[in-house]
Image (cartoon, rainbow, N blue to C red; front, side, top):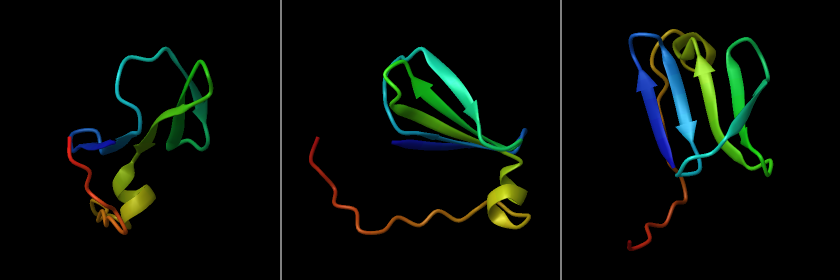
Length: 72
């Protein structure tokens, strides 16, 4: 999983699956869209206007809970 933030356009992207996928986009709201692979797996989540949508006017804090690290 990768989480990226583009300060210039205030967009947050959470990529759940690595690799190349032909995706369709499902718009949940004006700010939130899901990218789905052909087999309906969730590839990523895009959040526009991320500061307002997720962070009350600032870049949202990311907290990771209950994660175990696996060796590569």
